Amino acid sequence: MTKIKSFPLILLSFVMLLSCKMQRPSSQKSSVQLADEYKLADSILQVGLDNEALFTLLGDIKPMSSLVSFSFPIANTDSTKLLEENILETDSAQAYLAEIARIQRVVSSIDLDGLDVVFVPYAAAYGKTRSLQVSVVRTALLDSLLYAKQTFFGQFGITPGASPVMVVTANEYGKKYDRLRGYGHLFGYPDYAVDFFVKAFHTADTDGKHVERDFFRMPTFKSEEGNFVYAVPKGHRTNEVDSLIYKRATNLLEEYKRWRPRYLRPDSTLRSQELIRDFIKKQN
Image (cartoon, rainbow, N blue to C red; front, side, top):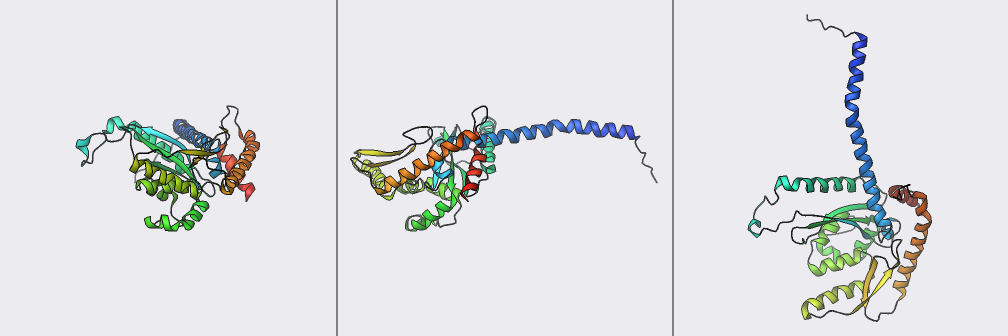
């Protein structure tokens, strides 16, 4: 029988200590990476909170809101490759794909009660540039919308309970006027504004005439005119629906202004995930 020689205790201790020291940089790198990705998630959500996504993140005014978009030179511009599989050159595209994967990891890591953050590429590319949009969806409000508008969304097989990323992707890749109408509903515009918006585009496409319009705007933390805005017929007088949306939006904005200073870091970045979780907890 072969005997296994035992290490002297002091040598064994040295080996274990050396092993720990050798492994520690990898552990630290992982922790740093996680911290960086958490802060990136916070920064994405801060953009939303300071703009129109506030009305999805902290309220039930908009079923969906845009957060941020990213653009990469990865789209196919070579007409000779329309039937080919290998579009990207791996070496040159690898850095872009790695960054997209990192953003997807960050988006997937965001865990907020009642909210889904989705990352969807735009169907249209501009030259070689492909943009990808990060949006947030309030799931209960989306389900209510899909039920209320089942005669529209149902034609695509979309029903309450559908995955938000499936709904957004199906809408983005839909036909032009369906896409416009779908986004109008998802962004929380009133029915009359959605109808006007779709018909105005159709008129411009068929008659070549620009339909005159005004805009109804809600303020945000970042701007008094804000990015929560929808087109209305020229000369439109504010109605009850507009007034209700405006009142709810401004009330929520004032509440956010009271909460925001308590969650600022020394570098003026916002602890966005913590703020949203605390706000949701208080509402419940």
